[in-house]
Each structure stands twice: as C-alpha cells, then as structure tokens.
Length: 318
Image (cartoon, rainbow, N blue to C red; front, side, top):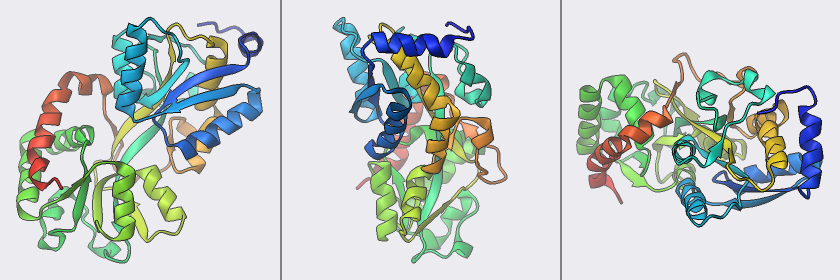
C-alpha cells in the first residue's frame, strides 16, 4: 500500500533481503511466460520460480495450499474469474501501484486485490484456403446460412463468451438463434483454444467462433493459412495477476506486479499479439465497443450460463 517516492527502491532493497526470488503460479502459455519472465529477471536480477497449469488447476492449488496453512505462492497470474474467487476467499492482498493510472477501467476492480494485465479477446478464426473473406458472416444470424453446415467449430468451455453474446443479442433471441444454429448447421465442439485454432489452420474446422486473438495472431505470423476477425459484439475476458496474502517474497512480488502492468511488460504482451491493459497500447478491434465480461457477475450467474451452454452445444460435442 506504500506510495512514497522511494517505493521502487524500497521494493528492490526488500527483494534482495528475500533472496532475490519469487514463486509464480500461472495459466499463460510457457512460451509467453518465458518472454516476460526473462525480461523481468534481466531487469531486476530476481529469479522467477514458475508453475504453470490450466486456470482451474491454478485456482485449486492456491485454495488447497491455503486450506493446509501453506504460503508458497507470491503471484497468481490467471483469468479474472479465478482471481475474483480468490478475492472472495480472502486469499489476496490489496495493492496500490503507480502503474494503475495507465490502465483501462475494466482492469481495476474496486476492491484492488487483483489487476488486469491483458485481455483475452474472443475472435473468429478461419482457414484462408477454405473460406473467402468476402463470404465471412458479419453477424451471428448469418451463420444460419446453408454454406456453414458442417464447417463451424467452438471451444467446449466458453460459457463466458456465450453469456456476453447472448446478453448483447437479447437473451431470448440469442438463445433461439444458437439453438437453431446447432439444429440446422451443427457445430464441432473441441476442448482447448490452442487445439481449436490449430484445427482451423489444418483445415479441419474452416471457421471457429471462439479462439483467442493472440493465439490466432501468433499462428498467422508464423505463416499458417489462417486469419481472424470479429463478429460484433466483440467479447473479452480480463486476465491478470494478484499478490497472494502471506506471500513469502512480497517485495519481489510487487516488483513483478509493477513490471507486468508497466510499459515494458505491456509492450512484450503487445508484441506477442495480446491486447494489453494499458490504454495507449490498446489495438483497434473494429467499430463496435469491446464488451468485457464482469467476473463477479459471471461467478454469481456462472451456473446458469454453464448449464445453458452445455444444453445447447452438448448434442454437437465430439
């Protein structure tokens, strides 16, 4: 919570006393974390001990360690809903950082116990050898056209995207549309956004409705026959990080926190195709305003949307 002019120096001095190390639990890909952690270690001389898993497993590990009275983790880096869950379990600490002033409002929950560092924007990816740009649907209703029969894919757990899109369309109309889509054209349901994006590049799924912009952009930059665009409204999920309550290396952890939302860390994210949380680094994503899923609301209504998502798409699951 300290905001004095010598904050950075006090953190650096404290980090040295702690042994110049910190422990990070993350759900971000190994390659992307390697780029971020390497830059942080070079700048601060602090070694990052990283454990990586899916977001639900990151949440489960933090909860299990807290129940056992263990304080192993310093920084938790994952999706906003698990971070919000940890806030509700009183396992995080509020932080005041001078970097907060540069972030978009959606990155700063009122309680201050986690911060958004990047946005996972749900985009539509297509195989450029199988789908012409001129025939791409510009609305979800256009997916009902017969040309999309047997050519669509979706990720198995994107009920937060679903909640955002259906709410924007009007709940009754949105649910009716997706039920009709599955009944008439079908949809291939795959688990894992990276898998789904790779299937688009391979031509097995010509058009995927829910891939992450950074995964699609990274494959596109590598020369895959893939491109992406956005059917409005664009839906995004905040991802971020938090200082664990009882963190064994709090000074080093706060240096990492500031780095991830500071200009250096945010530029690395931008260079790797992410949508950073800093206002000046936000890329254009079409004319429609970005709709960011409220993680607190999603936790409160998550069971409803998960049930609807499962009931509509389960018949198409393979």
